Length: 111
Image (cartoon, rainbow, N blue to C red; front, top):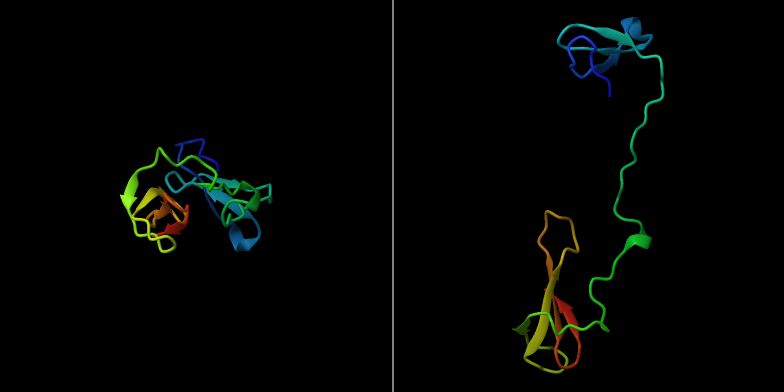
């Protein structure tokens, strides 16, 4: 990104005369500069974190006693209480996933 030395406006990339060369031009004061370097870097689109960077949010071996307890009917042992937590498992514009872990048998489910 370059700025106009005359007025400080961001220079815009455009074709030169007869499409022979590329020019950087100012929309405010009509300053023009011929682009001499043809290396244009295009960033690669990231589709998410690399598989090595995946983090386990809650592991079955962790101490869950500091999490809130809510009423939840466990489908495995019919216990009425479970630890509850939320984690952002999808994109940030979607709501967080709610997890429940039975206080008796340790069965985990999501909402």
